[in-house]
Image (cartoon, rainbow, N blue to C red; front, side, top):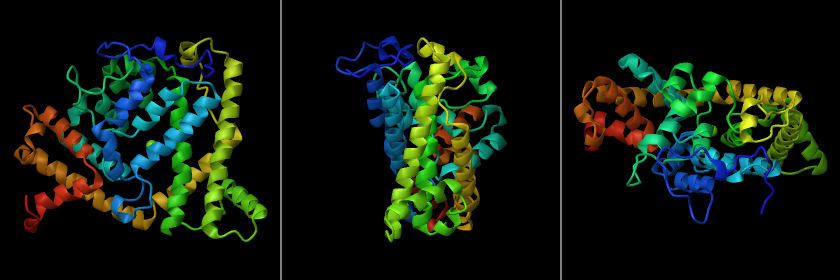
Length: 378
Ligand code: MG
């Protein structure tokens, strides 16, 4: 039996599921959540959704699926060393990107623009809210309910951010945005594990793609320091291994700093249980110095990778595809598969957003061809 800190989320004391169910027999409530997420349709589709690079650009780049696995791996290390509930952190990490559209953030921004233009009353499109919508209503697998019927704690963790307007409509799980309290420490860690994962793997993918170079990266002190220390230990090491080892050590440094700082903050706040931890200022944090360094890394990636002209060109195409699909469907709902047709305009717009958001990159491209290219078939 692993040690459990008093402030850890306890599956025996979960706030429960929307539809009451008998407790699981040979796993915890949070393990059951994790397992349901892995069996979900939306989880499998992550394999063909963009993280930064479109799926067909190369087999070696991260996809949303491998990104989510890396987030889960980092989150579990953090949870275990802080004696938190590893299964809950893992469930949140695996589910955090389920609501992502095809083509990454470009797809989301375009879908949001389409919703705002064609159904301003519907409240737009946001991938984080969509992740919750996937697990709460869109998955159709179980006889007694829509969605995966996950525990409150997993749903709370999936909903990372949320506007006040949305929060008011979400009931229990939106409450903390109104009360200005925090989610469980497990959820806070899953969120920071996401950041550790993408900062580091985007450097790796960025270098591999040739869109950024080591010379450019040496302007980021955090990278330069680790790179030079690896080179000092292994003079003459070939570039690929040098980069991999640098990234490995950067992840280690970030995890160690986060664990140390979070431990100190927990000791200072001394929450008696998981609920008391929700009332504290965020407990999972990097040290101030590490925060500065992580932000420099983020800024570098934004300026040099996410806004690289080759990434932007691909994103422009992606936005075009999402916009054309949405407009074709909203103007002529009969072009939609029957499952996605609705009576009211707002309901129809939302169903189109669900349909488009659920598409993988390659499915969106195929659907675009089927709709707009004569030679493509139906
Ligand atoms: Mg993510």
